[in-house]
Length: 285
Image 1 (cartoon, rainbow, N blue to C red):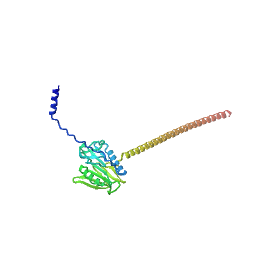
Image 2: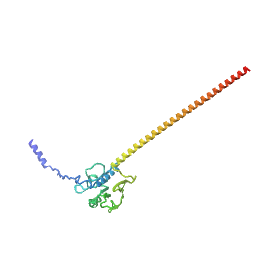
Image 3: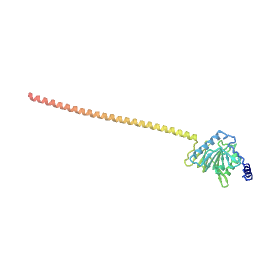
Image 4: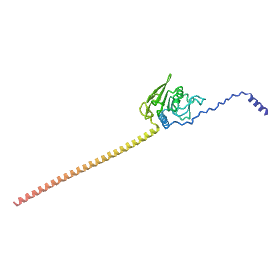
């Protein structure tokens, strides 16, 4: 038994085993500890854009909308990262992500990026970020300065062409990728559907609109019910008036018939009395 065990050990020693190389675990952070936005104005603008776009593409399972999320674009190097304020990716499934890793998404990067910019972030937004987005093939890149700190007008767009980005400015810019128009109104950036011309609402605005619509519908139904009740009351009053008129007409006919009968009876009695007087006069003569 001991000899057999020794032979097995010798065979194991002589056998060639594959070399296993352990790769170090790379950490891709989910946050840098910085706040989502500089001011309430920036935060509210970002939230509106993300929520409005998410709702706009709700029926398309292959459009992903996100914002303020780390986008890693080189596997193995967590320093190759950018965090767009708002971005839209086409051709990838919806779903919550902790980070967006380009190599896990079939190398499909954002089609559209929107940065809610400020004087503090302008160097990054117009420098490294713009270069990164151009390298990633972002077709449309928009910058919006809600406080008007350095952009005039406050909306700038960059369209990716063969030679790089082409800059366009204006208070109304069209995004062909989104099928939307970006409009600067009342110091805010709002999205409008090119097909319908309607403004995209945030979920809160949509809820308020639905509540207002429901209240208006209830009021319209109550008004319709009041009008129907009034019509029913009017019809009932008309029927009652018609019934009274018919009753009065019937009474008038009855009274006329009674008068005629009375007149006929009076005429008969008079004729009878006249006949009797005539008989008496003949008898006495």
